[in-house]
Length: 122
Image (cartoon, rainbow, N blue to C red; front, side):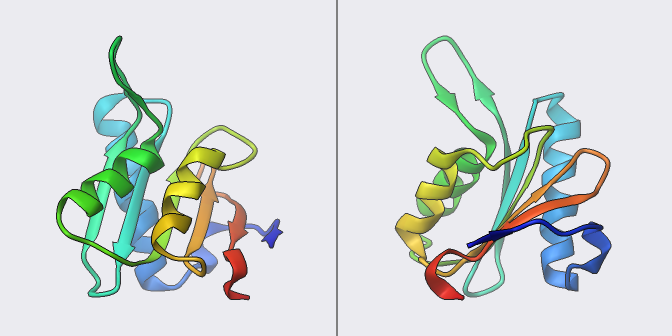
């Protein structure tokens, strides 16, 4: 279920941290998107869009890949900072591979919370 809501400041502190990390990843690289995920132990992984000739990953796919490469088997939440109107489906699917109920927050580059997807957990 996806719902449209407003300012990202309404997120809790842990989810707000994901937004900060995602914005930093995007800003640091100048990529179109940044993303961050949090595992069940509170560890976070951030990444930006990968656009190489031989490798293309959305920011959310890259953040999930970083978490999985570190041994993560379950996610609690994810945040994507983007100009898009919806989180990329491949990235959301990667999150769902690890957790049906992880919240996925889409945040505009201005910090406005665009949507929240709670999967089948709500």
